[in-house]
Amino acid sequence: MSLAGAGSFGDFVARAQRSGRLVVQPRMGVSDPAAMRTGLLATKHATATTVGTITLDSYTRMGDNANARTALATGAELNGYPIVAHDPAVTRAVLDGVAGPDFPVQIRHGSPCPQPIIEALMAAGLHATEGGPVSYCLPYSRTPLAESIPNWARGCDLLAGVEATGVQPHIECFGGCMMGQLCPPGLLVALSVLECMFFRQHGIRSVSLSYAQQTNAVQDTEAVLALRRLATEWLPDVDWHIVIYTYMGVYPRTADGAALLLEEAARLAVRTGAARLIVKTVAEGYRIPTFAENVAALQTAALAADHCTTITGSLVDTGIHAEASTLIETVVELGPDLGRALAEAFRLGYLDLPYCLHPDNAGRTRSVLDGSGRLQWARIGSMPIRNVVGPNGSAEMTAAGLLASLSYVERSYDSASLEQEYRAGLPAAAVNGREAGIPTRGSTP
Figure 1 (cartoon, rainbow, N blue to C red):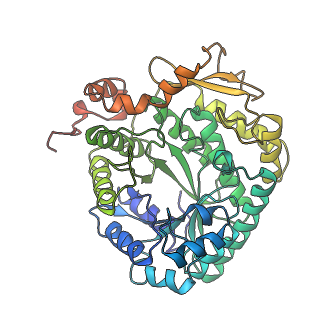
Figure 2 (cartoon, rainbow, N blue to C red; figure 1 turned 120 degrees about the vertical axis):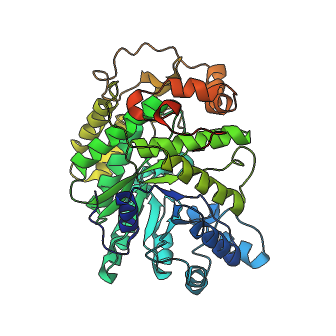
């Protein structure tokens, strides 16, 4: 649904989607301004419909800008771009002649204290970012929700002021990823919708709802379609689109396995009507990718997307929509202030992430993979979904089982027989596979 103003991040994505093009985006950030500009230009000139990424370093994400400045002064290499430590003029020079209506650039950070970052990106002339009051805080920091949530409320209020310049700001929610893996889809879908509702409550009128590719293609398809339905219901008056993250867990170590996983993520995006895809590269399993590897991933994903079509049939309903809807309704019923409602929902265990050790997470839920690689609940703790997820009789995850589950995707996609097995599990309605005329690796279009 597009209501975005001309020249905004959301408007660019909406125009691409109307033209039948999937927007592909890298995960990219380096501390050197010249190198960061080179990476953005490489992304812009890829044979694909792209948007740019500047991913921030760990110091900046956690508000430790003194150490970020020290690193710059000593020439130490950081794991991202320290936008607060750099003078705004430096960042504007990085973007000059690169960013614009035909190539919007997003700042990715996920910080629990986003205000200085938002001030810096606004000073550089940017207006799109990513994160959320819950996501990244759980599980990637120890910051209490009592701090992260009001921090994000102030950050949203600040970014909303960009509208005065005639450009609509955009925030991408990270709620559809959370632990990266082993979180059943219903909770991911609910968190993505709830965070975007929080953004709207604080003046943001253009958002993206995220969903991270998980362990079973059919389950993922059902989840993203449920996310679309719920976004339509709960966000009727804002610009929104869905962004798919290529698998965020332990990645295949072979080039063919990594490429196949990326291609499946692109097909998931297209068949579910998602508008944007965050790619990963063949190097993800063992090192930080080069710019060239990022460009290759962008082009691989774009080619896979070009040979897939939106789903035209229906899937078996396993209850993901009902589960997510119940969780959203439960949080909304806790009070009109979504920030306070989210904090209360975690305090009560109504929202509870499996295997997340953050102090504000109840930690009473557990998940398992069934025999087909679908994520299921083994324990639901106090989450109010007992009536919609069916009998809670799954086997408890053992330590060995957890390790095996964490490497499930890596092992599967590195297996020579995966492609045939994976495609055999997809419904014909997904229009995905040789029988639908879609080329596979090693075949010609």
